[in-house]
Length: 579
Image (tube, rainbow, N blue to C red; front, side, top):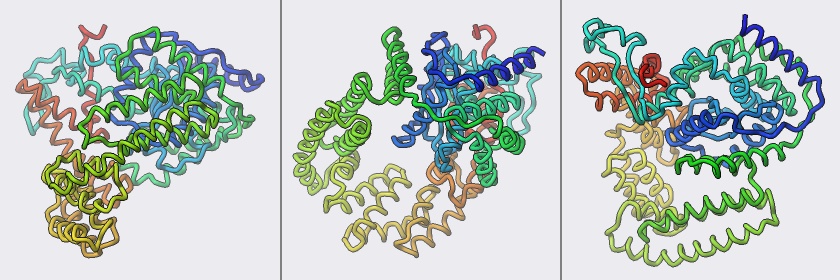
């Protein structure tokens, strides 16, 4: 009854807001610094775990639309931030402290602005409606937020504290599962992120967020029917998403699509309003938090990056922009001379200059950045003669070859360097990157001695390749039909028998729409299940180190597998440490 009353009040409030004239959102605050700090820690873990998706145009689009919606939410407890993570699974997730992430896989669907607005509105709604307070697994999620990397997590049956070892459930592969073993560190963080990224909310929460997300979209000038069209796009690709477990993490697809279509006429699409003032104040809140608290180095970098994307112009933004570039430059300059990647630093500078010119063509910072670029280009030019001498000498490290290709991509020595780098990667057991460089050597100079050697080497190597991504690269090239045929035959053989979960995960990351996704997923799930059995086995003999190693493999490389689902189902916080 209490939830029904709350929904009635929320609906009445929504109608009142719809009828009232638009006004700028009130100033944001950080109403609960403790919860914000915990969410910030997990946000930084998400970045560390998954990596940022480096796409400045999409990041700018997500922030533009996200803040246009957020200013209509009337939510003042936390500042919203929007980021991208490099995850092939199409998804988005929100932390209680206002941090919202969209995956690369979601953006790869080719969403228009109306669809993306409804995705972001949905995640904003999870925060504003404070669904974390009513999650079935709230105790686990919030306790882990409170004890992240300190208390750890128990992996065992929910009532394992009341069971003796002899009474533990029997696993026919490994015997009885004792339960109750503590895992810590990266494994605990992996479980948290899996919970946030891959677990669905209840039907009620999803419906509430869908509805509120559509309202926010319409208020900001976007078509709420984008929600229905998004679901239609999802359903058209349902077979592939089923392999990824998408419908497991986003249930009730048909019902939600129909509901979104039925609601689309509820709200009149309003004229969009600038969110510039709201974004400035968001940046100010984040900056003030930095000044008044002591976040870790990683959290500080996350906050400064979020403050920069919240409002990417002005004095504070320029300060953070220059600091970020100088940090990258100084890290590179600290490396040995021949391993310095001036090319990557110059590209980062040019990307920032391009963005800044579009935002503020008269910015004084542009001159500073150009001066830095001129200095870096001078150093890169000076390095070339020395690098060629070292290359001719034939004694060098892998990092030198990597830097050479980045620093001098148009040099006549590229086929030679690519071939040498392919050899180096192969010796290190990195078949995928080795094949990438052999292909580069062949394709950049097919008639050179190096190109011919690379082609011959690839034909000899292919029948014995084990890495799925390496084989798919060879199938996708069209310069050598015989090589393509050899790779296709080998991949058809290996895809059902590969032995390492990381191998399958890398294929899914690089080729999320590849022709072998279903077979790769089937094998990946089977390997993850074997690892799960080993987890139970090692727990039963008290070898927590090996158990944690396998837990990490499952959660890192097979997060959507039934084995990962079982791990999340069994995760709990030690009662005496939950606080």
